[in-house]
Length: 369
Ligand SMILES: Cc1ncc(COP(=O)(O)O)c(C=O)c1O
Image (cartoon, rainbow, N blue to C red; front, side):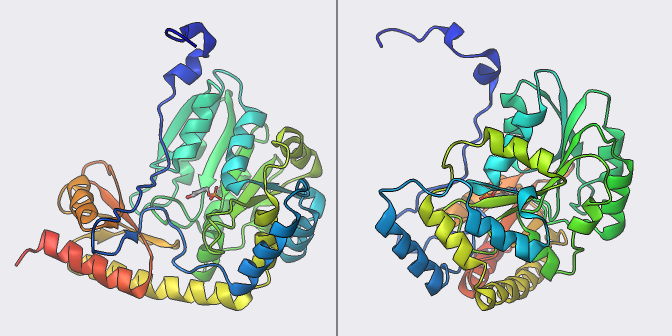
């Protein structure tokens, strides 16, 4: 093409879209300090050997398309969750299912509610459909505010995103709060309950959400991820448990053909059986989370209670400046605004060495000797 692309080619809602790229910063290979990637909530453990072997085996048949329905994976998920296989949907990361929820429910000018601060995909999917993002501030303790969420519902609301444990705070909803939500949310909208950190939340004592969500008469989906506790962020698999086959069929109807590749399907299916690997990761995460949280509190930060694989702290000095100083030391964390304060830092739980290095580096920044 020569010359400028005419504006009319692209819809106004896509022209207006703010780009929020995933926060991946390539490692600075020039530095002799190790790169500490603590900004994406990944697992510090590589996949279990059996998972690596399953992926290797899957490569032998890559001339074929993958099983679009992921039948083996869905059957194993049905067995583990107690949900019927026909109510379970899968996606290329739970991200694909967040997009699907917006696709299924939103037309231009409809309203969708999502927590603020929240996972950036909520705002992006809502904006891509030309719908209105109704942001609801999370509570002071970082938990999604159920009362404010309910109060934000209007006759135009078609979709409500709620996350527990929430990202970027780690806040966990209790049983009574989920029951209150499902009891009072109107039936004529979709509740998308985002549980990307589900396994960590359960390990921290959180409630099993499915029986609580099942008390809702209206439609709902709970989405979970293989990217976090299962350590498979690189292959992209997520799944959702829905309130009915009828709803699940809409997710199946719009899904991109073969969106989960054969290697990813094999990895996820095998990862479900690696219970010792998962248990070790959950134990490790809880131990390091306590250490990191305590260490940061001793340095004058206010730590939010976290039931996820990260710790979020309100900082005594501008958070973005601290993150920039850490980046200069090859330590990557996420800084974001927290109203009325110098900001917040979200730090993923890494290895034990990561915890020590991170605390030492932050100590050097806020309490220089
Ligand atoms: C709250 C939340 N939801 C969904 C996702 C998407 O995860 P994935 O697409 O890797 O399953 C993430 C990833 O960081 C997240 O933090």
